[in-house]
Image 1 (cartoon, helix red, strand yellow):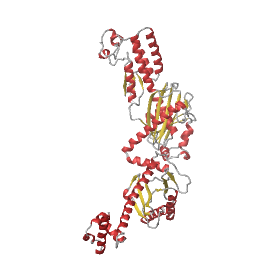
Image 2: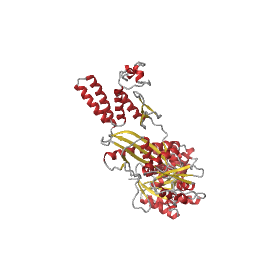
Image 3: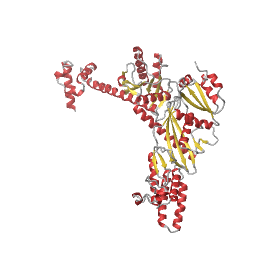
Image 4: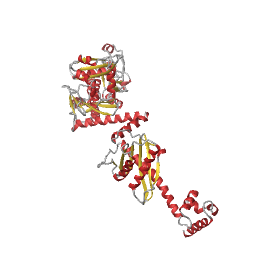
Length: 603
């Protein structure tokens, strides 16, 4: 390590839980990590067997100093790591991308508190609830509160001294019934605070408790024949009950849990969080994590759990997750449900994170088409068990009509897109009759024999439209040319979209929504279209030439000359003798005029 003796540094690190920091030659913090056992974890970085990827090797090569912080428990290490990463943003740590400033609902720290939403947190003793990833959900909640509880919206200093001095007058909001006029002592502070406490319960998902208290007040109002108060309470009760029915997604016995799920790819991970109180989802958010050292899902989920619980100040004793994270905390119960309501919650979180991932990737790929191409090629390489990216793909298809006019078509895709200038047709030369296998063998051999002779670069993937028979014929030609080990070749059977590999008895089935399968289908369909177009032209030309050969004195050569000159039989039928003499002899011209004259009479 040149000027850094890591062996000496390791001797100073204890076998205790804590957080370690790596520093580079410029005394810049480049990585922060947590550990159950600091010495064992840090030592693992310098063991060559554990340096499984290039990024980790680069990180280790830059380390010039190691510092650490000892804590009492693994959970303390977990929380300290999260706070330090957010503060210092080291180069090689996972980057938490959260480019939105989500809104909060604030209960202002003042006499007769106002309730409104804000994106800026001020440490003035006010209570903030949120953040709300869904702005529409936040406005719906505020709308419910405004309709159910008359609260003040003015920013007057409603101190007891000012109110008693009569400094204020009621405004239009009081006249409209949106405020009870605390500024003129029309509403007591105790009554106002009672409303605020109920609103806090609603925002925390405890609607059931509010409804029970309200029902008791409603019954009491009815019993005392106070029908005006009963009517107001009934209206508030119905509003809250309707809101609860829309927001309850699981059994109300699930009182206080956090739910997490993760979806990732090679560069990014996305983690969704749901906060559930009394069967109601009261908070939800998805964040994006950018990988720096090929971190696994377990490490990323652990980091995200710490971040979300800190951000939302959550103290839930139960956390629902897709797998057990590497956290040993007796105060938190991690649940991996297989059935029931908790499994439904986990599935809901999974749907949210997959949607967020797709939306983010689609958005990024629209701005960077080359990124989509690379991702698509990586997916294809993985799905088709290849050892190189399929940047150059070729697909073969055969066509014939009752054994006549056999042709082969080749279409070429480069970087996942059609390269039409490279499309090719083959007129089959060596095959007699309807022999699709022999036709495929000839086409493949001629195609790659020529590419080898010209020194052209071979494709990484060859697709054969057909099942095992056509695939075997193609492989036979590739082996004859000695290139069967240099390319991946597969056959696609139309009936069930099965993919066959040479020598493999069982087909490969890809998901019907798979991007890989869609590209293969696009290649197959394009080859079929291209081949059929050429085949029809050849067949039509052959049919027309056959009709002309029925004329006495007109053979195949003369028929071809006539079609080439006049382009169609109709123009030949309408041609004058002088025009015909441009192509054929006088005797042939007279025969053509005679034939079409007789044909016209008979029709």
